[in-house]
Length: 264
Image (cartoon, rainbow, N blue to C red; front, side, top):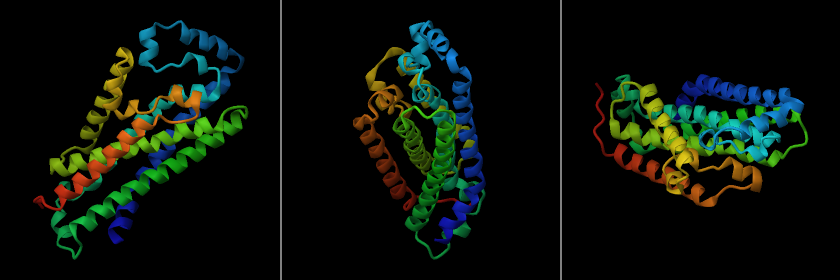
């Protein structure tokens, strides 16, 4: 429990910064939608006039852009990108910090099993992401309700919750990368390169329209146009994402409890 609280406390400042930053980004786009007002039809026509490749690249669902939830789904991908960076960074740093800071001997000589250490760290990372999402969702809903009332609250909530799903996948990926890599010299370099790599695959998949690409990158697990239209998720991709998180966390436990951890 002490390890859990220590890790959670050390992440607190980061939680507030990321949550407020992503919420501010969402609120900014919501205010842009409000500012468009009666000009939203012209904006919709402008988006519709873009080349088909560009629309696919930007994941523009022109038919729903005139609604708040449709406009929100259009810009949410950039919020998800920020959230993925936070989660990947958290997953890598929370596991590798002792090796990176040369304090592994202090932690591992304590009367606590490695499995318990891993459990405390993953639990702290999970709670950090949950807190981030609670703050983000609360601010976003408040902003949408203040700006406009005739919209699908369910759609906005479903879209917003995908942030947590995406973050859990990247957190699990960060954990397994940190466990396998051993000493990580630059957490942010690993996080940015990995997240942007998957984001580029996401854009590539949008352009070519290849369905198999959707299983490769977490950014394609959620079709926001589909969510706005059906108020539901596509369950096959939820299952794939959940299976990856379970597999990555399980593998992390197996490797971490058996590997040699260098103190220096």
